[in-house]
Length: 337
Length: 228
Image (tube, rainbow over all chains, first blue to last red; front, side):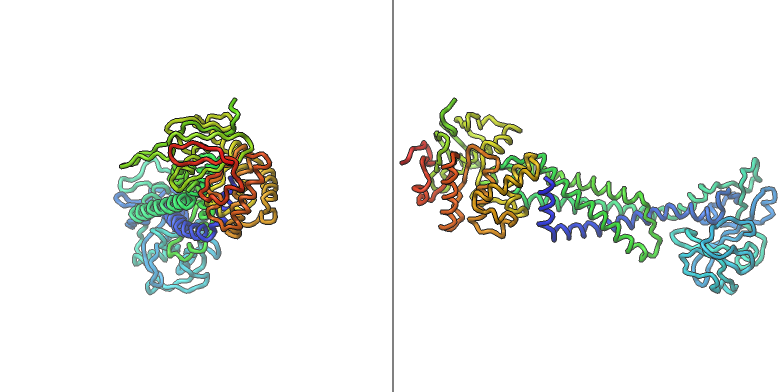
């Protein structure tokens, strides 16, 4: 049986090759889409971790999360709460839209730096690598000059907006005209009692809130994924069925000389599965070259290989049943012509 | 126990289409002892291929009995039918019907491979049979690389690979030129001389003097008649 499969793949190698390429292109898009959804889902958690570690956020009642609806309030309101002050605002850096996180970083352990130092002086900034800056680069916050002193990674929000980390006083100067307003206080503890105007958000709640604006985008990409799966199934089904049609005479002959429906049908399915797995492998390589050219970070999880591989094999098996039915329906007497 | 290897009695095959009822075989009889070559004569549509399809268990009969090597062919189903096709009969088709993706030796070995025989054993048997049909040096060639006569000899070798008692050949010379046809006929005659029973359908009466011991007319409502 395996000889028949191998020889048929060799015999129809151009069609097989083109089919695999076609399936691989569609599956590459599946990898990309799954990478985008994964990035959307992962980004808020990483951003929250980069901004405040594993600590809880004490924020004003009536506000959403720090990255979605930042509403700075008077720092005096937090006097009864232990922890580190943090200010988060949206802003512009050299014309680039950024999320600015201001803190005192003298005892900071986050964000984890890939290079450089923490922003300890006014004008010092640490920024996500995706913004394309190098340590030492001069920057402008509106009219306020600054300098990149460190870089970090995976510090973006809202589908790729880079986070800029600056010293708290400098942040208040450029964003609030020097007023002593903060967004939240970061604390390791869960206070027994909070003033009524404050509330506690865990890092998970902050991440969930940060994800909310992307719900529509995630739903759209998920819908595209469903459509791509449909296309994949149709391609696989069509190829296996056409293969069965092309080989009707061969199957009739093989049945006439004692071949079993089960074996011949299985050979068709195995052939479909082999082609599908080859397409998955090609797609896995293609996406590595294609993903960097996307404006948004594409974070393909290792589990995507299994998901797409297993899904495609299941699709091949389901779609291949049409071909198997064709084999079953082929009468050996057709070999007599 | 019947003295005949192939025995067909009162065979009726009837098809009903939307508008017509067709009886390609109507009360057909044939009795062939072992080691004979039987030629089924008749024009196109006279039921020759239908009879071969019946003998190979591929289509049902309306009535009558068909036994090959004392096996009731019409009663065979499932595994027993597959086993019958693999080992009791061999089939040679009019259009060669070789698998284009396989080499000559793989085509010959295919029935054994499908039956689960080890590849090495099956291919060795195929090589032996290709030698017998004079194509020992063409085992690695694909069908498209061979002439019609060579392809038909490969098809004969495939029909013999299960060492069948009966070889059924449907118009084995129809698609061949005269020289190729004669080489195939000569091959069939040699096989008969070695004790095989061969049933061929043909409308090429020129070939009959060379091969036929029995001549069965497949005209409607007639029975097999013994020839010289």
